[in-house]
Amino acid sequence: MRFLTFLLASCAAAQVPTVDWNKERAEILKHYRSLVQINSSSPPGNETAAVEYLKATLEAEGIPARTFALQPDRANLVARLKGNGRKRPLLLLAHTDVVPVQREKWPVDPFAAVLKDGYIWGRGTKDDKDKLAANLMMMLLAKRRGVSLDRDLIFLAESGEEADPVGVGINFMVNQHLDEINAEFALTEGGGATLENGRVTVVNIQTTEKVPRRARLIATGTSGHGSVPRLDNPLLHLAAAVAKVGAWETPMRLNDTTRVYFEKLATISSPERAARYNALLNPERTAGVQRYLAEKEPQRYSMLRTSVVPTILKGGIGANVIPSEAEATFDIRALPDEDMSKFFDEMKRVINDPAVRIEPITGNLRPVAPPSRLDSEMYRVLEQVSKRMFPGVTVLPTMSTGATDMAQLRAKGIQSYGIGPACAEPDCTNYGAHSDVERMQESELYRFVEFTWNVVMEIAAAR
Image (tube, rainbow, N blue to C red):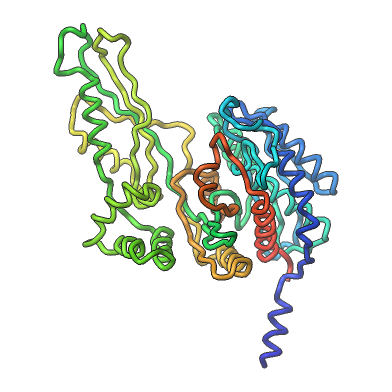
């Protein structure tokens, strides 16, 4: 009976050719460095240069690739490997644009992909040319090895993730070309892993994210000469309103992702930290923990609530002129279930000043989307592969305090999950994405490609 069980399990396993990862390293590095060397800073973007590189590489292997562009220099690429149709497709998503650089602040040329001391330096090395190279390798390896697939593999290299005021990237694709990218599951950026003494100890899988919103506070009063103080000076009213909002502790709420996150985090933390994380589940003990997190662990503090942060103050035209108006811009990162109408009503109550009004900023907003499920086939595969590759690892579902283009996919019903390479401190903090010293540890690039391959084959290869 045990033999029969083993036989059935073996027959059910995906039939995947083995990969000698040592032999694949040179090609991984070649594509990765080539992509980093393409200056696709957004704005202005110029992502089409990266798309042309990807398209030529894919088509040289017999993989058809199509481009879709709202603007000629900001193209998106879609490539597909057909499966047998037994399951719905898997979408591999990465963005081709990067944030701008201040070259004078970089220790190396940010677009040279300098390889030094075991690291590749450059803009986009962590956001998002690593995922771009990994997804490219998934398509190349699956094609070359003739992998039979239960589901189509779709590779979307999208433009405009970093800056997209007119919707050239994911919005363009989901609104006008959803049939090209529609899938059951998607894998993209947003997660990562913790490296301690060369060992991966924690894998974070992004399953939901906060919703970015913006608002202005506008204070009005009577303009006049600076030598005559006025009680209705809008700068005074604005300053008081900003201070009130800054001191406002918005309500804490856990969702399915953050509840599991803190429960599991407590199991791998020191007794002192574990007590704090467990206290978040106890309304009578949470107040003291909130204060600690706000001071010592601000990102986790943000995971618990809708955050409201002043980012821009504007007012005044001269040192001797009282302005008639002053304004402050707030970056609001809302919990996925936040009712923004009620939230702004409460914000107005907190400010309590008729001279100050709240103006929500509308425009190209990311949609509110439900979290991806923790009981899906994809999440189970991510857990299984993590535990197989990294014995003793803890897998945590996470909610990003920032935003990704998974929001648009989730809003269309695509269960989307964020993954990423491992890094160790101080590298994670001091040499991260968007910094002037952005870099990727070479060995972790290779390990991430292997991890992605194992996940893709487990979820997509024919059985």
